[in-house]
Length: 370
Image 1 (cartoon, rainbow, N blue to C red):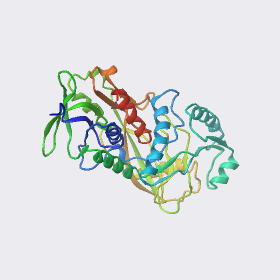
Image 2 (image 1 turned 90 degrees about the vertical axis):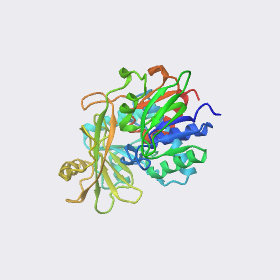
Image 3 (image 1 turned 90 degrees about the horizontal axis):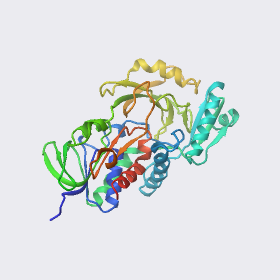
Image 4 (image 1 turned 135 degrees about the vertical axis):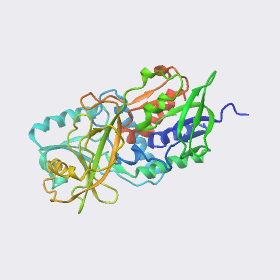
């Protein structure tokens, strides 16, 4: 009789949780991924830009810098192997005023430190030759940036887990976990058929619920649960022809990359997200925000027609910092932090978490000693 019902349990079936299940399955472990919703990827993973980030901005030596670049390379390979739609369209970071030009040099230096391939400075004329409708005084080009079908990606991860004998249990919310004597955990799950089972390893990747899940793990030190914040971002869709072939980004704002442009896989133009801090999960899109969006967009696209933007969707990011606080790194906490063998708990996995997901999963496996 097996000592454990599963070798590993992963909490959360978003992109990062499924990637963790995939990484552990590849190591020969039997894996169960618990998801409280009735379908995979219904939280942070379904309400983002579907951008594959190059890894330009993140501080030297940070998890974000390392895992974004490594994860991006692994992601493109996975998408090709599994025949999932993507477009390595490239990205321009544009300085719309002379005051912003110096920021481009700083970003370029950081991108090179981070080992981002193909980065180059463009003059105004070179940028306009690529994207004639731009307003800019100069730009950076990141040829490795792109967009992809994030839901197709998550379905492929689920398929890999199940093909390895694992399970993705939907409508099965995590309720609590208790360390067992010796090693491993007893995990209680709810839903229509509540159950309790045992596992050797426990990984928490529940996005917006990270703090609440950690609080339900017995003996998890409360002092090691960081305060969470909800960062809401709204998106508006353009009626009419998409103006640019590449991603268009302004220089980053405090705490985020700023409202940017992408042409989705269907060929339509989408702008967003903005950033406001909220106290509850509110996914409404306020039509009254359209004038502010239009003003911001016209900084880099003066040709935006009046009345061409329509409210699209909103996402909420699990932030570890408030509006006026410095942006921290990912938290991927192993036994060295919380003193619970066999547990990895993640907090603040926002952008570039989707791009980084396969590399995050490998980091989790490493921290479990696998």
